[in-house]
Length: 188
Image 1 (cartoon, rainbow, N blue to C red):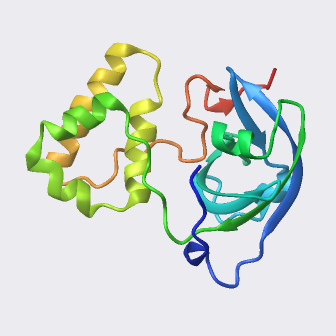
Image 2: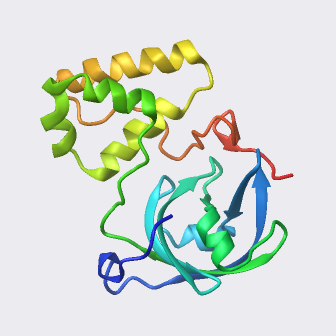
Image 3: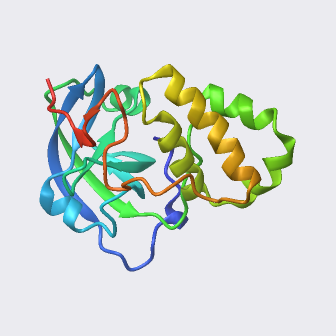
């Protein structure tokens, strides 16, 4: 989540408003969007948004839950700014964004890209949305060997001109700490 930039929102698109409870899964604070709120979004996969959570503006990418819905990770700065605790009810207003924020790059993939200057032009040329897909694909495994292989294969794919990692299910939850079989696990 980052500070919101209003001019990035899609003009004319209605706001998605809802109330939900701040939950935790694997010690990570999240808000699961109600089905009615997710249904108003343009994709069952990731969606870039700007928003307001209890009067605190933010910018992020909503993640799919693997069940035709979405979830929002609530970062520490937003939680502290509005004094949120797990179990609190939050008021959320979302606006679909035209511009995707840059993803947080995993250190191993960032180092691999830094050591591959031959793919740097293509990496800069692809969209932030495509970069989010690369990061999701790299991060979608707990297995160290599988992850290492994905970094290697990612470089090979980029070298061959591929702008997207592969054909994985964009509507599945790919965070291995928060999902099982592509679906968001239940909150504790």
